[in-house]
Structure formats: structure tokens, C-alpha cells
Image 1 (cartoon, rainbow, N blue to C red):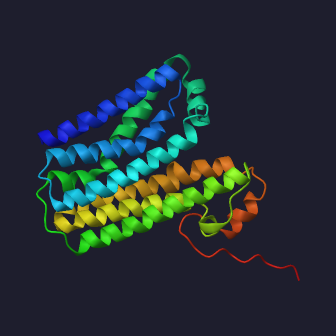
Image 2 (image 1 turned 45 degrees about the vertical axis):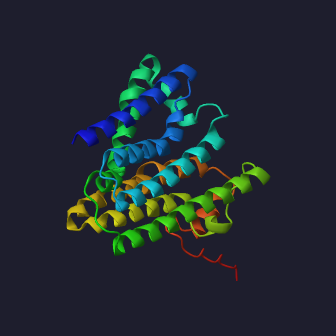
Image 3 (image 1 turned 45 degrees about the horizontal axis):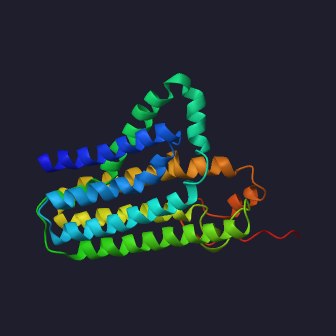
Length: 258
């Protein structure tokens, strides 16, 4: 229990530092960059404090790789830009209470979500390990599919926007899914959950982790917020009509006028 509390304390301290940095530089979208790093902190801390099993080592390695990649990607994209419009809107809405509301409504909720979504990793790191088995290898395979899908989608979008700033991306993975990066993100956490199943039926409750992150991406934050920003872009209506919303699927053929 003490190992879990210490892990939570380390992650909380990380969020606290980012909050103070956001206040200092009036840039609270730093928390988006720190999101991946919060999982890195919890994975490394819990592994160091736990029994250090082979199962925990695999879980920690995939989490650290994913978290570092995501944070570096977002830092390269956002660090030099003004604060994200979402956070500027919060400033206008909350006025003089912005910092208090930002801490309690944004930072603390992100802290809780980080620990809950990362629960499979904490579970594998802080409980006695079992020999690597079928679920470990299946989980790593699914995780690999997810990280490749997410990384390739991000790279394709970055290259497209560099050549065609502001233009809608409709090629590559983006022709099969309107949000291939979010689909990859979901796969990653299903893969981590499958790894935890190596511990047996006692790990079944951890399915709440991939269900939560998938639900948030599809219904709350990722897809809805992105589509709200994109709906006024030229070509969006046609793209939305022929391209799968989340799960990759061959694009619908455009009907030809007779």
C-alpha cells in the first residue's frame, strides 16, 4: 500500500510543478504535454518500488516508450505556440477564479485519470509477477499495432500540414479513419490490459482502464472536440460522409451521377 501511495505522491508532485509552470507562463496547455510523462513517472516509480518482475518490466517499458513519444510529439507541436484555445476559453469563462478552477477541475481530474487509466501498469508493477505467457505476448502485439498506428498517423498528419498548412488531411491512414491517432491510442491501452491478464482472473477488473480511455476518446474529448473544430473546414462534409469515424475501414466510394 505504501508503494502505491508513494507512486501517487510522485505523480501528483509532477502535476503540481506543471500547474505552477502554467500559472507562471500563462500556458496551461503544458498539461497536455505532461499527460504522457505522468504515465512515465507512475510506471518508473511503481516498478522501482515493486518486486521488479519480468511482467512489470515489460509493462513499464511499453508505457515509458509510449509516454515519451507522446510528450515529445506534443512538445514539438505546441510548445512554441500560444496557449491552446480550449484553455483560453476557460480563462474567459472563469475570470478571476481561473487558477483555482484550473487546478481543481483540470489538473486534479487529469491526475486521477492518469492513475486510473494507468492502473494495469501499477497492478503489474506492485503485485508479485507471474512468468511471461500468452497474454503478455498478445498484449505486446496489440500494443505494437497501436503504437505503430498512432505514430504513423501523427507522422502523416505532420508531413501533410508542413506542405499544406490548414488543408484537410484525407490520405494514408486518414482515408480509412477520421481519427487514426485516437484509434491507435485506444489499441495501446487494450494491449496493456491484455498484458495484465497474465495475472489471471484477478486482473479482469482492469478492463475499466481501456474502456474508459476509449470512451473518453470517442465520446468526450478526442473525437468530439476535434470534429467540432473541423466542421467548418472546406471538404469536411464530404470527408465525413465517406470516412469511418473511428475504427479503420475502407472509404466509401463516391456515388457517380447518372
